Structures are given as structure tokens and as C-alpha cells.
Image: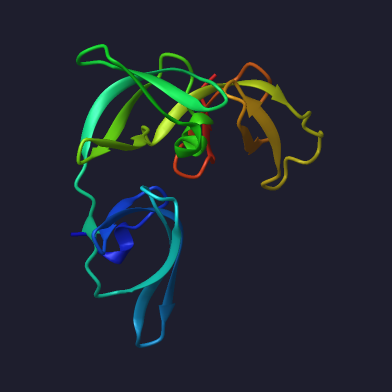
Length: 186
């Protein structure tokens, strides 16, 4: 069972017999009332959304899923393609189910495919991935006194907000949960 502090973007939970992915959440505390988490949930089967507030004492059921290791092959306008590593079967899923994850995956990237009742429902990425910067806005000299950031584009096409010292061809570590910059590796 999950508590309310276990809810994060991307967490899969079971609610009223359906599996939902946490799309957004905000935690707040009320004086003497304890904490509450307001969430926006997306049904992984039909795509419908639901707003739900959980109180501090609520117990949330994690989704029971089967994970299968796979390698990302490529994507086109309609689908995303993977190769299962256990039996080398090629698997496809609709592109709209993996829109967030595509910004972090490059060819040959290993992921876990998530199945519920033998049905593919999503992708689980590592928490952090290393990506090369392909273009970066120039940093303005003298702006380094505070936490000023600039935008850069990584090899997967995703835009990431980074510190001014990050340059083109640097390799950076990015958090896949929210797309934020973690550190520069080289």
C-alpha cells in the first residue's frame, strides 16, 4: 500500500478497478488537519482524466503490473517500436501512450514495458538518463551571480532548462520524472 507521500508524477495506482497514472500532484498541509495531496489522474486504458484528493490517512493501492525488459528501436508518426529482450519479439504501442517518454529515449535505450492482464499499458524509464546537448542558447557573461538558466535541446529533441555553463556537445543527466536538469557529466 502507498501513502500519500509516495505519489509522484508517473506513479501507477489502482482505483475503483482501473489503473491510473498520476499526471500531476500537489501536496499541502492544513493546520491541525494533516496533509492532503491533490492529484490529476489519467486512466491508462481509455485516457480519461480524474481529479482526486487524498487525505493523510488514505492508503492507495499500487497497480499490479508485470515488467518486461525491452530495447527502444524507433518511432514513427503513429507508433513506438520495441524489441523484447527475452524472446526478441518486436512490440509496438500507440505513440500517444509514450509521448512523455519519447523525449528521453534514444535508439538502443533499455526500458521496462508495463503489462496489466497481458495488455501493454506503458513504459517505465530509469529515473535519470544521460543525453548529449545538440544546441544551446549562448550564456551571457555576468549573469552567473544567481540561478539563471537557459534552454538547450538534447539529442532526443526535448528542450531542457540548464545552467548557463552548459554548452553544445556536453553530456547532461536529466530526471525523467519531470524533465529537469540534474548535472553535467562532460
